[in-house]
Length: 202
Image 1 (cartoon, rainbow, N blue to C red):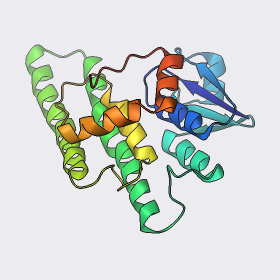
Image 2: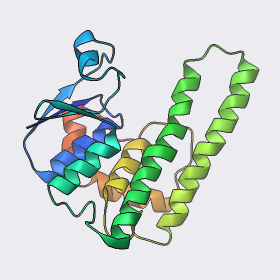
Image 3: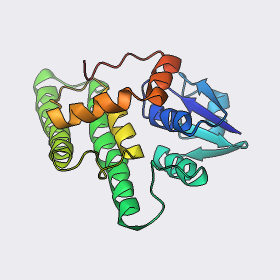
Image 4: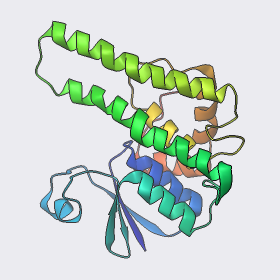
C-alpha cells in the first residue's frame, strides 16, 4: 500500500501523476504544514513528496518515481539500454538542475534585502532558469519528448515545474509538450485532487 504526502502543485505532483498513471491503489495526504511534529517523525527534512511503501518512508521524488515505474513495469521508464539512460538523464535533469534553479527564486522571495541587491540577484537567478528552459526547448525541437519519441516521467516533472509561475519565457516546443501532458487523464486527476489550476499554457 502506498501513501503519498503532497503539497498542492509542488514537485510532489509528479509522483501523484505517476501513481495515477499506474492505476494502483494509494492514499494521497495533503501536507500543508511541513513542520508538523507527526510529519517530521516520518521525514525530518520537512519536505514533500514523501511516500510510504507499506509504512516505510521513502524520500526524494526521483527515487520514488524510479521505484514505482520499475516495480509496476511502466513504459514511462524504459527497462534497459540507451532509452533508459536517456529517460533517467532527463528525469535527473529536471530533478537536479531545473528544480533547484527554480527553487532559488522562492528562496530569494524569503530574503530580507534592499531592492538593488534583490534586483541583481533576481536577474542572475532568472537568467539561469531561463537558460534551462531554453535547453529544454532546443531538445524538444529535435525530439517529440525529452527522452525521445515516447513520453517518460521527465515530461511529467517538467510539466509540474512549468506551472510554478516563474518569470521565464516558455518556448513553443515546451508548450507543445505541456499541453500534451496536462491532457492526460492521470494529470487531470491530480490537478482535480490537489485543486490546482494549470496556468503555464492556455
